[in-house]
Length: 175
Image (cartoon, rainbow, N blue to C red; front, side, top):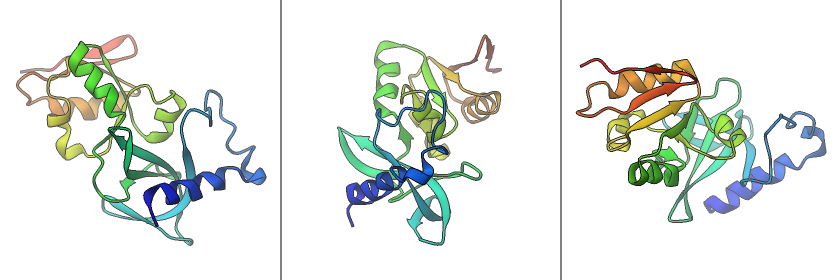
């Protein structure tokens, strides 16, 4: 089955009238992106659709406007995995904008928060490549203190780490 077919099946699940009340979250618009729900089994960093698996939010990862991977975010603990193991970040165009224009990059802890924010920013999927991803990014704004701390811990040894903001406070890197 193609990635688009899998995403379409997951999207159809969200149209179930029994789920309508569950999916009503303030500021969470279903018309901004194609996403869905599926049952998955996660093995390290990849997932498989499994009818007896855990419920997960499914979103697509694009490169040059083409779906090249899917991302599952398990609902019970927000653990993230990819279908093919290829995607490193969601919102790659925002990363490119932050690099080229020097604007602050919004970072979200998981795809659920990212969707709720209208996909305006990024979700880091592969923390092993964060330093390369955030190279040439001057500043980031993190959705939560725990995310800000994780970004700080991961990037503090970079030659020029990004300045990390959280709400009205910022986390300074110590060299």
